[in-house]
Picture 1: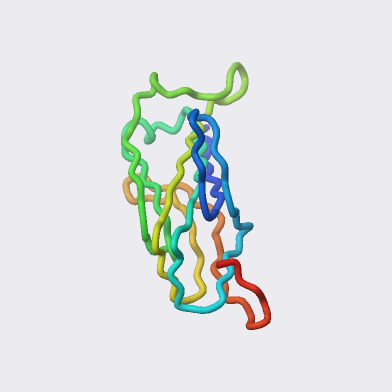
Picture 2: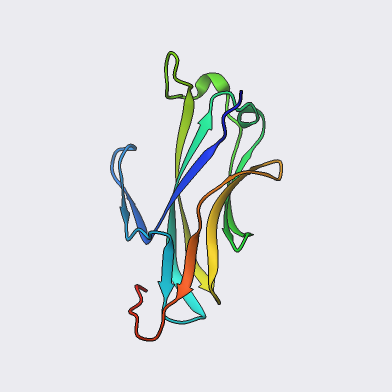
Length: 151
């Protein structure tokens, strides 16, 4: 039985990478809502801390490129393509009875992101044009006049 791929995304203002490869700091994380005072707006930077969990028995991961796309209302705005890997070189987590899983952590930034109306931002994964997983959205909303924006 093949388990599904999972994706979790933290949307934020900045990701600080530390000297070692195992630590990073997420700054200005959003909890599902990105409020703006008015449209159109040009967002100087938005960062995506992307965690992908791939079961060891997901064979397409070893044979085909994995596309990681940032979308705005389901239209691609930015992407990263991960090339297939050799199965015996992957550091899987899990042992014994526990299923093995590869955990990938990607940091992606989009600079000068134009927003002209309320929308939903997501990160989705696809192989051969088939969407295999997508994140929960970050909803871009316009605040009422009496509310204070974060940007």
